[in-house]
Image (cartoon, rainbow, N blue to C red; front, side, top):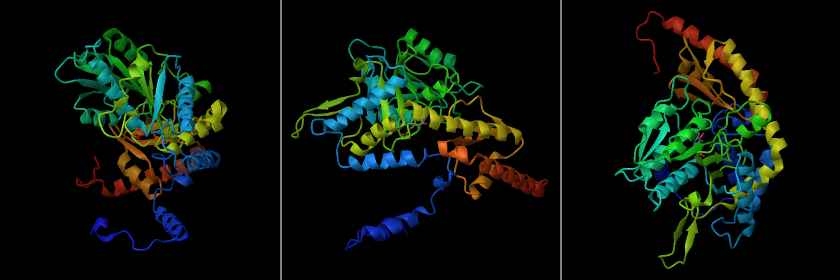
Length: 422
Ligand SMILES: *Cc1c(COP(=O)(O)O)cnc(C)c1O
């Protein structure tokens, strides 16, 4: 029987004490992210950051970003978060943006802005019957979702052998209905930065909107570069870039429910904003998808950014890249092939003669909750500063998982019905 049939609103309420105990207990069977055993969904930047997130969130939990006149504090914090974000992403004085609820929201709003821009009087690029958006096959499904909602065709173009966007093939797919092309910095599956400069050249030449999806990279790549890595140009430094998405609640280490959508100019951004007055409630202006906007998420973002500053981000991200390098080295010794040359916090690695899904399952049994890519089949980690402390545990568990998979495949060798997980 489903819980909707058995759980009814209780007649009498219970104390917070009682509820808290129950809630903590329920969390016991969740992924063990506090031990560093989760490398997806959660970003653990340490106790200091968690404290700032919680305090700042609670301080503005009841305030509503929908009402900038009522809460100029939140408006100011949002403006400053956008400005701080742009300050590390080569934003110019013309660049603008907003805080959204997350990467999917940012991407949806960027697609909406590009669509309405294409429809605006002086930009008739999008005059085909059906508009389209062109993305590399590694792009996040948020683009498919946005396009599905707006009845736009999404063209997924296979990535090259090096797993980066195939710019030439993407350009070939452009036609009169194309309202946007996309590159990721980096893509989620591979953690690799697409050739944004090449995409920028195509966008400028063809007069098409280029969106850089830096949801998972926007607030780590600039600092990894400051730490000495040669990260290729991926942000507003590249001329053809019209908009970007960069998630605060990922490597910005802010509380969940916070991303930024950034635009080259207010002329582009104005196509995102919804301004409506034909109802009895008076004029309502919403820049992003949300109506009510949680003040806590905005306040926590402002506080964490100011708490960390450039030095704090450089330090936290140095722990991430150190963890990645240690794992890179370790998995190489275990015979894995790291996909491409990851520079940020995501790493994926395949194996030529191991069933990596079977290894994944062994790791899962050892308490690890991580991700998995399907093309090619590879183990996938999205690392946090905390992982720097657990790389050797991870590699030890990986070694024993491999041994377990090898011994079980020896037992079943010669058996034609041996399990394949693909
Ligand atoms: C996480 C992610 C998104 C979506 O962000 P959400 O905050 O989960 O909605 C989009 N693109 C990339 C590359 C991502 O990693």
